[in-house]
Length: 135
Image 1 (spheres, one colour):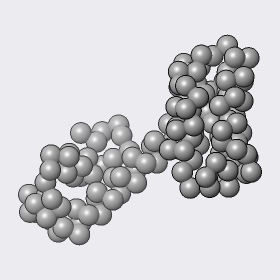
Image 2: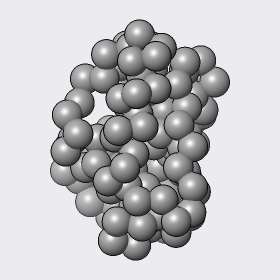
Image 3: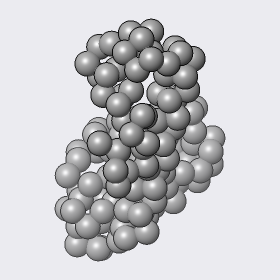
């Protein structure tokens, strides 16, 4: 089950059982281990998944034809205009509307924003397929 992934067999098993609705205590009884051990396995599995997701984003960013730098002090309402202009120059069709781009930025940048203002720099990455993500 975990072969070829960033998860050990035990981590994958714990996540599989959690998805099926079992509690950590139930899993511990089933696997003949402590609930604390199940908790550790689950936390490490989720950490490994998050690390793998960040790695995939980095790989996509490295291949992406458009990486738009959004700097501290920028107004996020101006970002879609810059993005669409840069995408047009690269001959890439953005699959999102202006409102969707702003929503995606709010979702992906989260604590890097204060209202409309950027308080910590981030990148808006556009893939050659027109997909958008925030790093």
